[in-house]
Length: 438
Image (cartoon, helix red, strand yellow):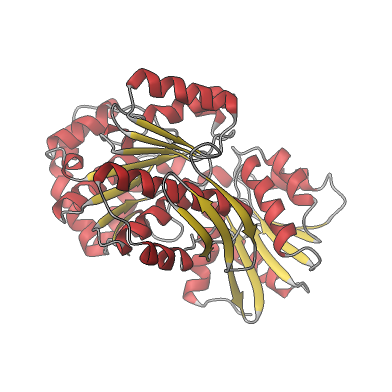
């Protein structure tokens, strides 16, 4: 109960209305008040429009298996807030979560007393808690996923050893800007003096913005996809995907990994380059056999995530912007070219559901539109109206659990849930509790 009450109070700090407090003043003050715990371990800092979660997971898993004690910070979570803070792959426990908050609560209250502008946000508190938890448990390395953007994100008070930018495409345009160049400027804000930089598959125009920022802050080295590392000979099979990796120093043929999707070829390559960059900077000799073993089991929940429910093939994918929807389209056609496909789709009000509806409508034989169960998903009828413009069998069921049950009652070869990580999280929660009547 103590844990649940704490979670409720944290969410009341504005997350229910998606009240983003960009800026570093509050997180700097809060971490200073608790002793700057973020300065006690090495850091790999990862941003990007898409792919940053997968890369964060892969890099963490690889270094855990290399013998390092690794803290991992991700957002958002799918089912439980505990997922956001991990050490060696284990989520922070409810007891540890509560205790870590209590350890810094007094300083939070002092900031609250100064007024709304000084009061730490939900994400700032969670970030400070992660730093405190990692420091107290003496991790060797923290792999941090940026929450939003980069330059003004709460994670960006760290002095990272390696900075990673996975991709640049349009998302959160009201906050980050309406062009790839503006978004790149925000993402490039995580670059720091003397750190190593890894850039994924990024178009020239936004990449030039990043390279200019790298020159300005005087980074030590830059490793670019297509120039310093790349992959060839990609082969796709559900949960058994292969590529040949040509890296900064490593050449690895027939790299096997569980993670599905066309986009994971790029994510795995960027992850390997990140591992190489950090190892080079820190003087780590990689155990290649252990690295291969880690990748063999690598997958990231909610990203072309395959399972079987009562003998039915189910894919959960959090494609929530145009770039991700296009990659999802490629992946569906690659893995399931001829199968009958039905989907449950929910898209947040502030996403480009007009463009996403056009993409998704060309993939499925039937679509069920539902509500994404957070404040930003209050108007699913608008999403439904967009899908009605296309010649496809369509249904609207407001309640996501009822909609999911209806999905599984359809006659199809493969079942999909997509459009939002928050919708996926709800479905995963339902699946974990075995409450489905089917």
